[in-house]
Amino acid sequence: MFGLANPDRFLRFTRLLTPVLWTVAAVLLAVATWLAFAAPEDYQQGDTVRIMFVHVPAATLGLGAYAALGVSSFFALVFRHALADAAARAAALPGAAFTFLALVTGSLWGKPMWGAWWAWGDARLMSVLILFLFYLGYMALRASIDDEQKAARAAAVLGLVGLINLPIVKFSVDWWNTLHQPASLLRAGGPSLTSEFLTPLLTMMAAWGALFLALWLTAIRTEIVRRRVLAIRARRALEA
Amino acid sequence: MIDLDMGKYAAFVWPAWAITALVLGGLAGRALIAARRWSAELKRLEPGEGDRP
Image 1 (spheres, rainbow over the protein chains, first blue to last red):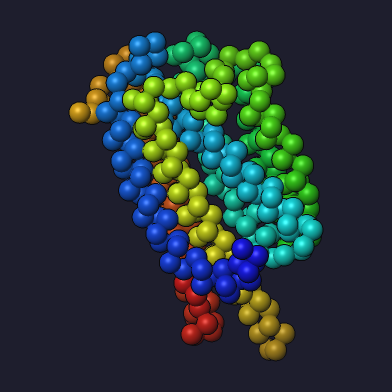
Image 2 (tube, chains in turn red, yellow):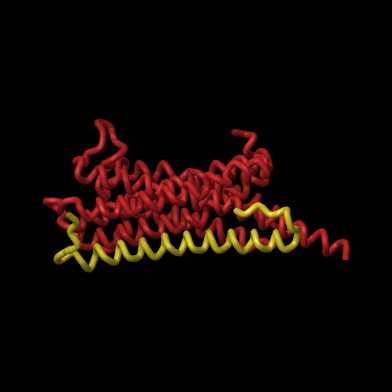
């Protein structure tokens, strides 16, 4: 596992894996979309239940991508490893996009079900908004410092601090009163969904998981190549 | 059989799916275009050195 921290070995290992992940993600997305619209209407929520098939994976992967960013930031800070920093950086944009989608699709689901697009006092909504702001802050901090090493260190500290928010997002529905429904997948006693909703949802989550891995590995590989290009340009500028 | 009639909730369901498709498509396109661009630049600078991401 730690052998993959070598950029050359990482590039060799992921050269075939990355296109496989893109293919798996595309196939699973197509199958999951078909299953989502083949599922029956919910007896209480009607057709709005179909928003669940994009909202739940977006929220789950938004959290998962931040966990990847935070753990990579830890390795970048402690071991000062360039690949860990590239991994943290590569997780930021997909994670921010997933969290943005969780907020928007949640709002579109909330209006017909709760009668409100947004609730400022709601613990789940606010903790997910804070997660989104951590992503934006991470990307803005990196972009605002010219020295890439200093930017990486500062962003890694922010990335680590943001990890505190992950259990708050997860358990906010248990710790506080909220409009948001309690956990229906990861909960004691197993999922509360019936198989006609659980199958499309799990298929969609697998699709988003494969898509995140494909995006993440592609972005890490691109970052390694980008740094090589910048190093070559800097070396030639010195030689000239 | 798939059901595409969202009834009175169409104004909520379709925008949720449409914005998801747009964002995911944008993410994938951006990642693949950046990968190609930097790989081509590396090959241009050092032919034979490039590893296509």
